[in-house]
Length: 126
Image (cartoon, rainbow, N blue to C red; front, side, top):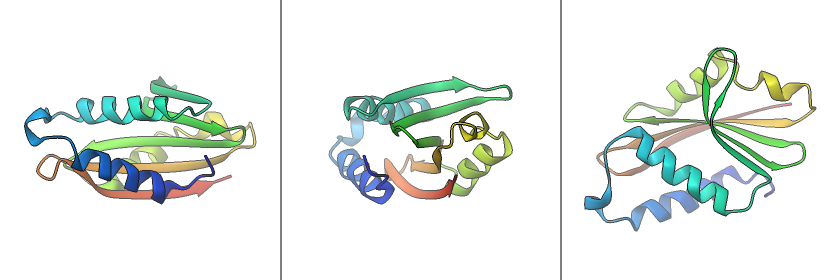
């Protein structure tokens, strides 16, 4: 709840380690559904999937508490830089700037071989 990105990534990595390999379906959407569902269950103020903007769709938006927003882009078998660059290129964060939020841009890559988060990067803007 306090913006501990490293802690929440570690929690997700530990959770994915406990999912049997034969339960994984190798599509980005399946990782997104699991990630989204857990975030919803954690009780954040607001969790949205596929939030539409004027030029694209944000994979996941999380309002942790008033003034703290995460814009999350997920990739499968790519890299965190690609995910983060997509957020910045499509300016997914712009609609939250006017509200005076601290915005965490979070790019996450999942590996279909390791079946887990293998790369993530974060940038914070205010």
